[in-house]
Length: 264
Ligand code: MLT
Image (cartoon, rainbow, N blue to C red; front, side):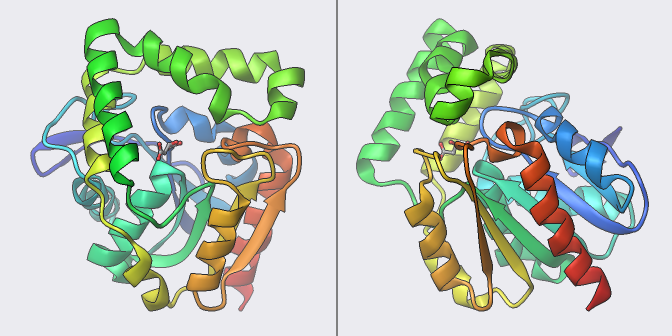
């Protein structure tokens, strides 16, 4: 489905019924990364995976920022007349979840923050992002796929699941150049979300792959320490894309979390 949000079209799916669950993807993927979750969760809830502007079927629409991505998510909820949703964000999706909480917190019923961090980019990190913007504009998305793929997967997946490795590589290699450049701009300009953490008053689940080297367990523990009453689940044999690498384990912890929201 595609809806007009302000100045641009945003693509999403709307599958199932019950409690609304918005799924926000990692960089530089798109909403198809949530297929293993939608397939499992659809029996219990209304799943709404969204393509950020510039990714998947959402067209390139500058300028890019976490705030604009968050406003797009709120716009999709408006178009579906959904007052509140559980927000599941993985990595960059988590950065957008923080922006959504800052700007539209009354829309958030609960949070699942997977393989993400609350800190802003360091100066060195921001400079690496600028190099990646040059790389994607000069050599295309495949260069980003080649540069990123190994770190996105845990050692176990790299060794045992070439199918997942190849599928993610293909998705990144096909991602639009300007969507990638825009997301890199948005990420390097994002604020530190440390001040946001103590303001989070909705139930929050934090998930991290034990083998995640991009946002390692230490980042997840710091998140948990900052968000009152939050819970942390560590998934063994998973790296940064824990939802794809250990889908059954990821779905179990999310399903339990959703049940705790519905029945409490
Ligand atoms: C992601 O998976 O969204 C990225 O690794 C996030 C980042 O580069 O900070």
